[in-house]
Length: 152
Image (tube, rainbow, N blue to C red; front, side):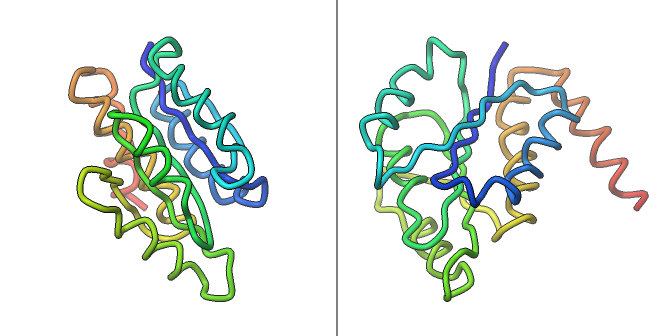
């Protein structure tokens, strides 16, 4: 079954990105969750990205704060869709991460969502929407989820 890969650059981003995992679970989408820093362990990241096909990964969600290199580095290493979640971990409260992720150069696209928990949640829906192009069950699950949140 097709999977989503969630990668964070630091364990400190785990709490925010737990929202991504919750929604993917509700939508019945399998995922992997890894802590791999683009700055501190580039070779491990390269190795992980290179195995995406054999692990049935179809979409990457990469969350990062500060300089937020992780989403762009992932996008540079794959042709698969990459969704970047900026994390407000610095004294600039995430504006630096947002600007870093949203300003990828031509040829290295990263779909960018809102800061922190809103972005974490939307990244799951965005990834699900990509998978739903070829999976009607996921599309049905997204519709159910959206109908549920309309009633809140």
